[in-house]
Image 1 (tube, rainbow, N blue to C red):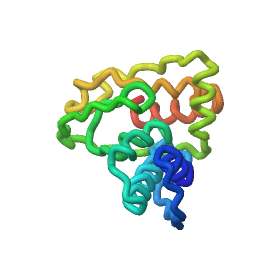
Image 2: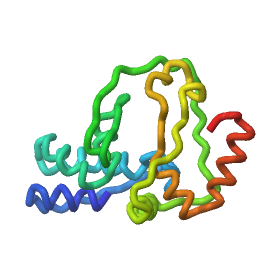
Image 3: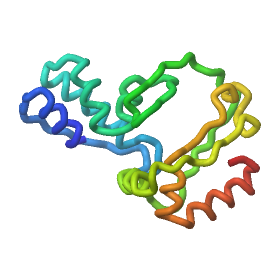
Image 4: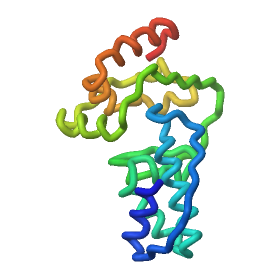
Amino acid sequence: IWQAVDALRAETGNARCMSLTLAKRIPVAAGLAGGSADAAATLVAAAELLDLPRAAVWEVAARVGADVRFCLQGGFAWMEGHGDRLTALAPVPTDYALAVVVPPFALDTGAVYRRWDRMGEPHGEAVDGKHLPPSLRRFGPLVNDLYPAALDLRPDLGDWRAELIERWERP
């Protein structure tokens, strides 16, 4: 959250003092954009405290983190690039249940991105439409390009994922 404040201060030149308290409710290093959501909320609050326009927040958000603009926008969106290009989409029916499973080990997001860069920006495996709920199939195949880098950092991630696929019969 301090990186967000520092980035906003650098953008605007406004260095007014403030005190912030963070109460985390999303597990750290779970891949759920918790840090990005914290940064987005901080940007909104700091902009209000500093009496800055929303446009300043939007510009800074892309520099703070890949998911920060999405966390500001919310809703359902197609994200491209490094999180800087968002296309809002109509909500889809919730005709499915979603389970979020967090591995028993942490992967630092920055380390995963750095490894992805060093690996030459590899592409992840596609999850085809047959493994997606019917209302999401039009968005398939879905790909997580960071997975190869995460796997390179933590090879046991592959074993963990294979066990989940076997138990749930889904990638």
